[in-house]
Image (tube, rainbow, N blue to C red; front, side):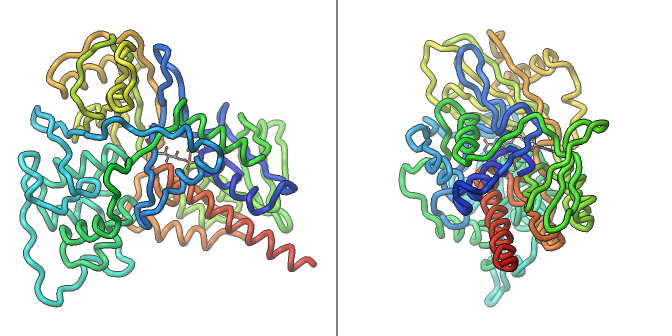
Length: 459
Ligand SMILES: Cc1cc2nc3c(=O)[nH]c(=O)nc-3n(C[C@H](O)[C@H](O)[C@H](O)COP(=O)(O)OP(=O)(O)OC[C@H]3O[C@@H](n4cnc5c(N)ncnc54)[C@H](O)[C@@H]3O)c2cc1C
């Protein structure tokens, strides 16, 4: 396993299930700990997430438990799962906070009457009899282009863009519908109107009343990553950058260690569960056509600034807010969202940075924290008090920017891989933790199939 983020760890865990106790599984992780974007720290005596904070409880395509929920339970964290106390978020537009309207899919509305005063949509013309579906069977489009065409600019600029931006720090006009909203893309392949497709997608997977959308792990998602690593029984080497990958006989040779003093190890099979840039570098000597395809994926950089504000600091009764422009793309009212005790410092997390606006982050931590605090104050309409403590976590090149056709490029890259080599993670199959877990599992299944068919052949 190259990469000890949640995708690589999920792959290791799945392989153990397949191969039993005798299978040798090794995880090489460049960082000082496993988890990748799952990293938990402490601020003002409280656990805080320096990266991802929660994951979807259900699969957007099947409506069943998400792969991450399933994995968390499988590694013994079922009793540690906790849910937000409030999930109500708002969008900051024109100096006011507007609740996110009900009945949308990542902001794409099924009911136009629910949008004002946040936005006004251009009504879709009723479909002519026999009108074809919005998308062909394998067609993909940019989210912004589709929504602008069907419902007008305001719905994109004031609703979809901030919602998508909250997840990807990206541009709604450039992000792929199929990769970012697979359930809506599927519905668009069967419906002649966009609002009809949203309603169909929502109706296909009705949510039981009161069922939580997101879950977190008490003590933090870092604990989740550590639990998966432990349950996988893999040998984990942290602080180990895999620098090269070459075919070697029936398997693969990995190069680690210092350039002047390289260490080579061989493996029957390899899962690359790393972001696109390192994946492309490693594939250059292992499967060049795949390297070219994987290397086309671009990333946005963000910084998460967490503040501990004096206990009692008043914040709106919301889980957080989203903003369509400016330094801060989203803020999470951590203490409100997760019901932290009233006598403790109030935690607030600002997510700063947007795709192609990296320059705004290129200042020292204190300057960035001050700018983020002021920006959240502006969005709330009142300056926030001086924090008791703050923490800046920079995530350079961390959020994938899936372009239309991304899923086809990934499929083509996978088809160009040699036997016993698999790709997994957010570079391939989706940004969310559940998608990364499912991606790791898929890679493990491919690898296991390869190993078993090789064993049968060699008998
Ligand atoms: C700030 C932020 C907040 C997020 N919030 C959420 C959220 O709340 N909910 C949610 O579902 N998703 C969230 N996401 C997305 C989600 O966390 C990630 O998409 C997911 O964790 C990626 O997992 P991964 O295993 O694919 O990759 P990563 O977590 O990037 O792991 C890849 C690992 O590979 C290692 N590596 C790289 N190159 C090498 C090499 N050459 N040799 C060895 N190791 C290498 C890296 O050090 C890293 O640990 C967030 C992402 C970010 C950045």
